[in-house]
Length: 484
Figure 1 (cartoon, rainbow, N blue to C red):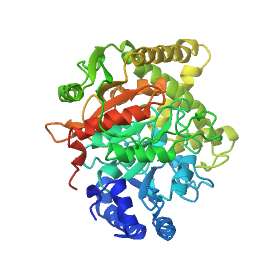
Figure 2 (tube, rainbow, N blue to C red; figure 1 turned 30 degrees about the vertical axis):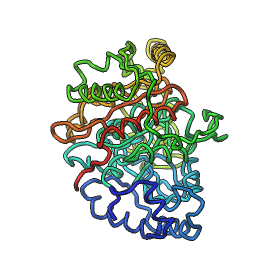
Figure 3 (cartoon, rainbow, N blue to C red; figure 1 turned 180 degrees about the vertical axis):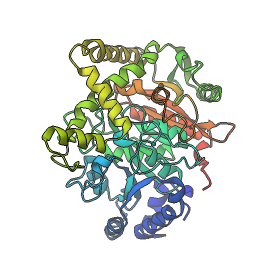
Figure 4 (spheres, one colour; figure 1 turned 90 degrees about the vertical axis):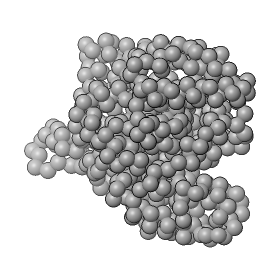
């Protein structure tokens, strides 16, 4: 079976009509993983024995009730805890960590009958933009294996782009779903903060993190977000709102919608090919009856400094729990408690994680808190006001997801500032907490995917999916796939 010929709907129909079983589908997934994984390195842990049991249970239950995820093999980012399946956050610190409970999103997938194929590679503790900071391996972009797949959810993106699974879960703190989706030609959704429970997500920056889906089509993405969304009393930031049927009304109609096109997206730092793709999409929306107008998003340039101060400060606090005492890596040959802490954290964390802990600790320290963390919080408020002003008049914002196409492995790993600037176009949505989706927007002259970003108002994912679906149907980018 060629997974590129299928969607969640067609796989569900095949299972329902008994053209194949979930066990056969899951075995086929592991067969394909064995073939392409040496080139892609998307997985940290494979869950074959348990996955086949889950598939058999799905087959026994049957498919008549229309549950579209039952029996479907999926991948899960390795910072989302899974009971009985090693969860490492791609760090030496958690190399042998075996969780005793499931994250809420994993529980929801199990209730839907989905099959967990395995845990996907990422930047260590989700800190990075290329999946090169992982302790275990470097994931490659299936479109060009000399290039990065993006980060931090690089394994989640690469596994879907390579056809290893039809969909996966990632996390987005400052663009970590949308940026890899753009680099690998996928649909990647960062939901509104609070739409999806964070219970069981290994925290990086608690006020920014969100779990979301990777798929090849907008409809598949909507189905997966429906399954994982909803109020969770275990997460104090979870929104007590009813989950819309995101996939129900995807008809491609955008006539009458007002589209904002920020002029700041067309600056020297954004490649001309990507700017051209955005302008083409804007013209297509106009042809479909939408109104596209230029607006200003003046706080865009402040997003990077504000984000890295806030995210690093929260990381400094969250990562204190990894101390060598309770669980995780523990340094040997220590003579005092202080030495245990220092040696464990020095050996257990990689360079990027240590860099961000130091930056965050400095930003929160006495004498610097007001100048850095407090000021970043004030800038965050200005960014939220910018979005509120635009959404008071417009349905969504259209722009690029990334400033360039996927860069080469090793190109930016030794230049943290260059790596951080890769997030220029994505971090502001996390700071504001609004939803955003990246969809395929064409290809560069080198044949690399280009991503377009649609940003919406709070809890208006339904409207974003409608707009994204219209753009998808006006093009055939989502039908293309890499040849490995």
